[in-house]
Image (cartoon, rainbow over all chains, first blue to last red; front, side):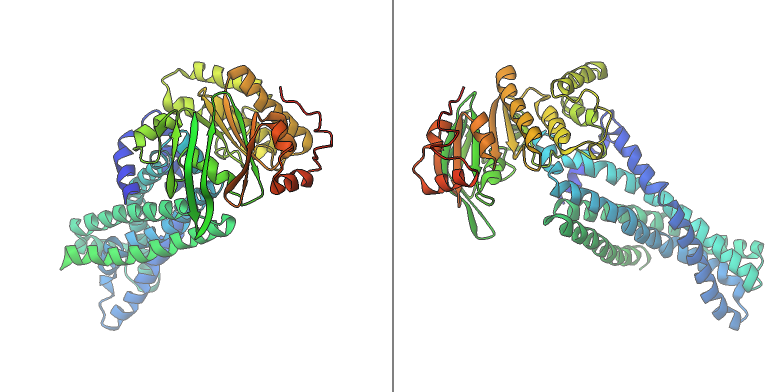
Length: 237
Length: 254
């Protein structure tokens, strides 16, 4: 936790002369480099949601409501959740592997000896990258998921894009959006903290790096699930 | 300058350092030798408090470092430059950026002033053409020299070398030895060197300390060291074909 608090404290230097380059690099790595896989996952998440709920609703002649089912599910839960899983598996694991390798090859010790705080130099830019990009990527996931649902609605369930979109915007509220984005932000903090902690705790050379990478993904997934539930419970019950 | 007093360290229930006491004086090139697992690198890490002792005390220039806060520790660490065994260069930065890093982090010098100093140090270490290369693009010997350039860029009083010649061919190893001697002569740096390489130790050291199973078995000048009566020392010397009657018989240190 000390690592996280210190990294948060140093975020005021995120775009200062010494850290600007690394922060921008992390924004790029988190945002741009993840966009491909997020696009595919988001589209198919929306399509699967639309198909599953649409087929059930069709039995009662209510398939016009798939717009709201997809949009509310995506904005409240699936958007931030799917984005977090992808980022934990791609960016989080890469952070754990990089910091783990740096730990076992004494690069972290070298930073400490040079009186360069690893929490400012390494953790803070990654924290800023993830916390800023997670909500943006979540909005992107939401939009693509809803679009994926529209494609399935119009091609397989006979719901026109116009009525799908009318229905989708009718039921989703601003609160749903804010809660979803809040989740995304919290998930960003969780992924960074777990990945950096696992990286710094690495021992035993290459085997240790592999272990840290796996642990980072597994622990992040579990915490994201539990915290996601708690946030939903806090805002909707 | 550096003083260990009854320092003990245990790792995973094994006593790695067992009540060791010694002193490194200003201007010394103090060499620590011993078999693998003897506690050499652990001793080095204690000097900069990358590890803390279980008991005993360590002082640098008369200041005890065990209970220092972060800012005090930073002040003490600023007296040190460290060449790590793997050189520990940051892989995503060029050699020039690696060497410039401490200056960029701790000084307010302009980029031109920083690059002038960096290039001067790189030239001194024969890396004038390698500044824009990345660590993965240069040889092991060049990486060690780049690590040394970074270690001395802030003009430290003390440089710690962790196995500076390990993994290098004999010619490059001797070149690194020469650099360590040059550092002392040209910059007046106190050096602490951890090595397995006795030829190197006898060439560069003004004192040689041998650790065995966490204890000091010898701490002497090179001349005294090769004549040590300790069995462990003699066996270590013999393992590297150095005998009292061999070519080191007439050894004399500068």
